Length: 250
Image (cartoon, one colour):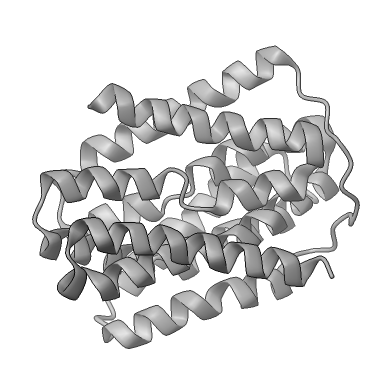
C-alpha cells in the first residue's frame, strides 16, 4: 500500500514535468497545484480511518491553504534575488509559521472554507509578473529522475506522519506543497526567475481545484459516505479547475 502511494506521487510529479516539456511552465504548475498527491492520500486515509477523522484532516488542510499560497508567492518573489536554497527556506518558513498560526485560531469551519477559497484569488494578484506564452520547456532525462526522487523522499515523510499524527499536524503536512517545493528548485537555476514565477502562478491557479476537492469532501462526508463523497470531491475539483483555466485564458 505504501509503495502504491509513492507510485502515485511519482506519477504526478512526472506528469507535471512532462506537461512543462510540452506546454510550458504555467500549465505544469496548474497540473501540480491540483490534488494529484493529497487527493489519493485522502482516499487511502478513507480506507484506513473513520470518516469523521478524515473530515478533521480535510478541514485542517483547508486551514493551512492560505499558508500554502503564501509559500508560492514568497518563493516567486524571492527567486528574483535569491538562489533556490534561500528561496526554498524562506518560503517554507512562511508556510510553517503561517500554517501553524492559522491552526491555532480555531476558526469556524465556514470561515475556514471561505478563506481557503479566497486565498488563490489573492495569491494570483500578489504574484510577480510572468511570461504569458505556452512555450515548451527543455528538461533533461536525468533531471526528471531527480525531480521524482526528491518528491518521493518528501512524500514518504508526509505519509508516514499523516496516518498517526493529530489532525492539525496531519493537515499541515498534507497542505505542504510537495511539487511546489520540488519543481521550483529545478526551474529557478535552469530557466530563471521569470519561468519560476510562471510555474508558481500556474500552481496557485491549480489550487482552485485543490480547494474545491477538500471543501466538497468536508461538506459531503457526513451525508454521502466515504465513496460517494470522495468521487464528488474529484468531480468538483476537476470542474472548478477547468472553469478557472478556461476563464484565465480567454
